[in-house]
Every structure is written in structure tokens, then in C-alpha cells.
Length: 164
Image (tube, rainbow, N blue to C red; front, side, top):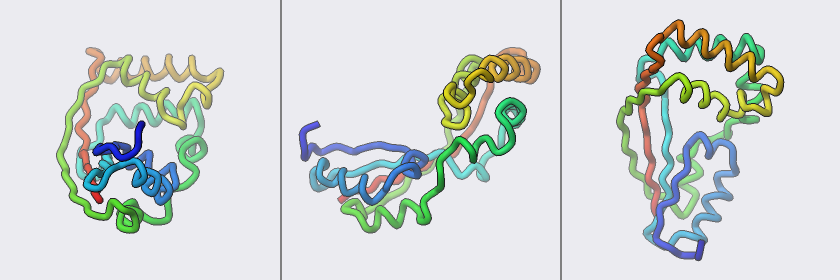
């Protein structure tokens, strides 16, 4: 991308936890024209919405197949010691505004099972020979929970728009 275009660069707050936030923001400052900015989008905190019962089924099945602590063992190494607000305050993108709303989505059985393979802690690389067992058990347990094969979830969405 040519330098200095008036763009908003989007990345999720979850993704930001996996990177050197100061370096990414400094790099973006070289690419984004004055007045441009970044938008950080997050789903959380979950305490503000009702946890869907089918999520407990997925976590139980993943624990049974992958093992207890599977999220910590195969997830991000560590969360940053400080929050994203501190990194934004130090960056060229220190002017922030926040928007929040709830979003309800409905997923099919195939979408929900496929989603599990997109996570670092339950990816095909982590699962290896256990992938078929996870797939079969998830499909059986989730179908028993919702025979029509649909799964609804409402999540809080937060967006921080940070400009220079």
C-alpha cells in the first residue's frame, strides 16, 4: 500500500494482544495520513451478556478431546501487561472515541464446528489425529442440544476509533 493514504486501519483488540502494540502503532503512523486513524474492534466483556448454553458444550468437548487447560496451552503466550488505551495514549493515535452495541448472530452447526478450527487452541495443527474425534463429538453433542442445527449468540461489540 502506498504511504500516506487517508485510511482507517481495522484490527481486533484480541489480535492486538498478540503483537507489540507500540511498534504496530508506530508503523501505522508512517502509513496513515494526519487525520486518519485506527479502529480496534472487540467482542467483550462477556459479563454484560447471557452466555449461550451451547458454548459450555463446546468447552466441555474441547476439554475432553484436547485436555484441560487447552486454551492456555495453545492460546496467546500472555496478555500485554498494560491495556490498549496506554499504547494508544503514547502513539500518534491518541485521540479516541468509543462506540458500543450488542450484535446477535445465528450460526449453523457447520459454521459453529468450523469456527472451532479457526482458533489457535483448537486448530487442525493442534488437534492432529484428534480432529476427527472432536468433529464427531461436537456434532453429536450440539445436535442433541439444538436438533434444528441453529445456534444464537448475542455479543457486546466495542470499537475504539483512535485518530491522530
